[in-house]
Every structure is written in C-alpha cells, then in structure tokens.
Image (tube, one colour):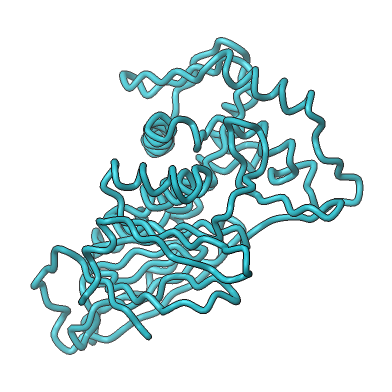
Length: 336
C-alpha cells in the first residue's frame, strides 16, 4: 500500500508556460548531486551547471573536515584560546548546529570531531584501513573530558569563534543539508523557482513540474523491511534520512555505526534503523535526523513532538522485521 504525505502550505505559482525540465549533475563532498528544474522553452541555462558546482566548491572550501586547508580545517588546527573570524556561511551553519546541540541535550554535537576520528569515520585513521584499531576506554574518556571541559564560544558580533584548544569541528551532519538549501537559493536567484535539488540522497523541492504536479519522492526504505511506502509531495519542503545501514564496520562480531553519541563517546547501539525528518530547510532536516537517531525511538519521538518536527522512526524488531512511528506533525501530513 502507498501512503501520501502532503505539505500544509501549497503555492499557486505555476511553472513557466510550456516549460521543459532541464537536468544537471556532478560530484562533491564525496557524493553525487543532481538538479532538475523547469525552464521556459528557449531559456538560456548553459551557465547553471558551473554555477551550481561553484556553490558546492565554496562550501567545501569553508566547511569540509576532509580538506586540511578549508576554513574548518584551519580552525581545528588553531592555537588554544585564539579567536577565529569565520566566513558568513560557515558561521551561520555552525551557529545552527550548536542550537540543535543544545536543544538535543548534546545528542548531536558539531564539536565532537575528535570522537568521530577515534572511531575511524574521519579523514584519517580510517576504519577501513588494515592498521585501524578501535579506541580504548581511556582514549574515549580523554576525548569526552576535553570536549566537556572547554566549550566552543561563538560571538555573532564579528562572526568569531573561540578555539578553546583541541576542539575538532565536524559539520558532516549538517553541511550536506545546507548545501541542498544553498543550491535551491542559487536557482531562485537565477529565476528558476521550480526545481528539485538532491545532494547525497537529501532533497529539497520548490514549485511544481510542467504538468502542475509537485516533485514526488519516496521516503527511504530500509532493506528487508516490509512496510508501506510513504510518498512525499516535496513542495516547499526538504527531507533527510539518517540510517544505520549507511556506514559502519564490524569487529569481533559486533557492528559499529558511523553515528557517534557524543554523550558516551560510543557508536550508537539502539534499535533504530532510520529516522527521516521533513522540514522547510534541509539543513534542519539533516541535523535533526542525526540527533533523533542518537536519542533512539522513545526519547527521539518525545523530542520531535516537543520541537514540532515532522519525523518518521523505523525501529528494528526482535523478530527481524521493522515497525514505524510517526510524529504528530508528520502524521498530520498524511492524505487520509
């Protein structure tokens, strides 16, 4: 059975008369990106692919923890007790990530890059290298104590951030979502109000297709889970999913997820298979899907209700199947 999710607000702005769909694609952030947009029949769009790629390249230059010379890389290497001036976009994304960190009780923390690195999911000491060794309890305890002892401080005046010493920023759970928003904004500045943007599986839709239909997308399915499909009209909305099937490694018969709980310093080990968040901003959907995944089904759903988030939790059962839990806000989007 197929169920349909509809936005609460629907714009009556039509697509260009006789509009045609143009498609663009490329690679960035270790993944792929794609754009579908509606253009007038004779519109000149040759510049758009390069423009889209330039937007993504700019984000990498500022916020990538894989690039040593990015602004983020330089911040991570900055001297203790030094104030660093951040580019506007970097500062805004980091500020939002810190808001989600506070609201989630640090279930998500953009300052926990040292823990991510210890578990082999960062740019070096990778889990898939033959010399990788899982961190010891002492190493985890030290990283946690350093994280708690000297917090990051942001000053909106002057867009400054204090590097207290040893803070390793990792914006991988929010920058990809931000990149989707950034591409959508860029397209609107180019007069392309009707489009679907995708980066690494995260999406944002605006306007409608030439036939007046919204951009229909199916929420990610968990392999082997016999569940009804959920199809979303991505009209003025974005969607992001965090799943335990994305990146992980197995060692000594145990599976270690790439999602780290900053509160314990350990990869998550709850019963969640995936969390999907639908939001007006993909950056928000991205960050919250990670935070709710760390919290688990019970606490995550409780916080989703408190925050008014449209969220879907897919929970693994002991019998090998999966069950689904929808927040009130998402349930109210069902076309029933």
